[in-house]
Length: 261
Image 1 (tube, helix red, strand yellow):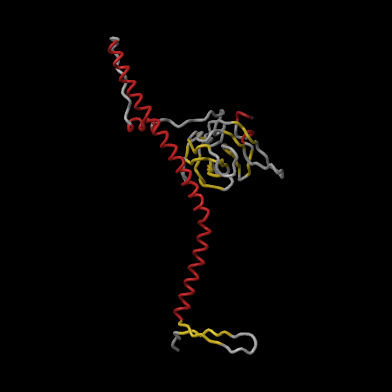
Image 2 (cartoon, rainbow, N blue to C red; image 1 turned 180 degrees about the vertical axis):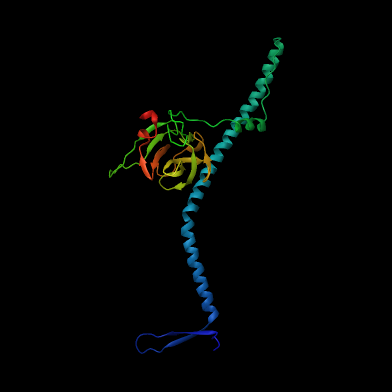
């Protein structure tokens, strides 16, 4: 039996009112159903990616501010560089007038200078006597302890410690590990999670800038991020956690830190 190219839509009102029928081409209903499906999918995708869009917008705004600040520093550095050149010329003339045979060392060009920076060794934290670099030891940053470790049913639940420091202070890995998470969270702001073995992880929160990516292997003492004030935070600081099988332990009383046994 051939398929009909039209669909009749009947409208039957209450009471004795006359029934009405509308003959609609089948392709119109199919197109309407397809359009509705696209709208529903679009709404779902919008809410799925809305948080990501907001975080990227916040990152773009922060990068714009950082770029503006760097432009100011670049201008100041340029002025200092010009003043340095003038000072070298004046000192060179004075040494000649004084009969002193001295030549000032040349300032290296940018490529040479940055190549030397790339060859620098990573900053290594002072550790306890443990030789197992996959075990967290010491603190990830120099700072002031602003909040301690609190667990249980207390309203002051805090599964880590907070170290107050200036924005831009480097945050270092307290143990060798692999970056398991590197993302933005409404509470912890820009944060990182390092996995050191099957049961042990460390977390670093409220960063201003992340310097590593998911899947990256980082040695102990590596720069992970820069201290910031992102997420639910009232002042620049680092939130630091140590977790064993997902359970937080006090980093100031860690059973792994032989220095505190």
